[in-house]
Length: 284
Image (cartoon, rainbow, N blue to C red):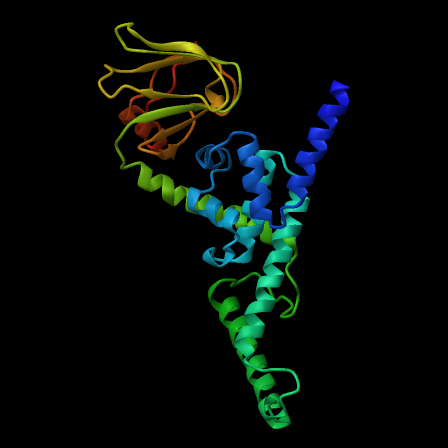
């Protein structure tokens, strides 16, 4: 009887979830169902929070292009455990519907209004102007942005996979710019566990223990501002997202290794983020 009740609840939750029409609504609902904050998703995907909010609200016009919407939505869906193809298909559909609505509003014509139908001569002139504009834009692109890359088809459609790769590359560039701003920031240092069962010890240089425990996914620890040379000891530095004054900085490591006596003050973390820094984590 209990099993039938559990199945009924799961079916009800699934039905409620499928009733959400937009990709943003589904992403937000799944994130809240997992108890995740936008900060956690931002740390996992390295997508700025303002762009995640744009995806959730479906206001794609606030993004530079459709490639951002598709690429960001795919990474968001992967992080919260949704079907990536289903979400990106929804985003493409919403983008297409939004474009159709804008075109209809911009046209200003009503079906059957003969007075507002352009003449055949005007239509041909407009078509010729559009072709000239397209050719001019293509020539400008080849001259200034694609020199040496060889000729390409003017009317070839871009594949979605290429668009998504472009979005990922542009995301990396933007993250690098955001990180550059973070390198000048000062403020509280916060560690956020990205997985369950992560053991860690935070302590001062003189041995005074600040915190020692096994942390669950989403648990945070703020390094006290008055701590004297704070250090970390853990075997999973790759499982912690780190922020300084709310801005993300690189992890201490990208794979499981044992770190001990590794400085974690704001100054030490910023020095590690600087390519010219000489500070390296101490590996036990």
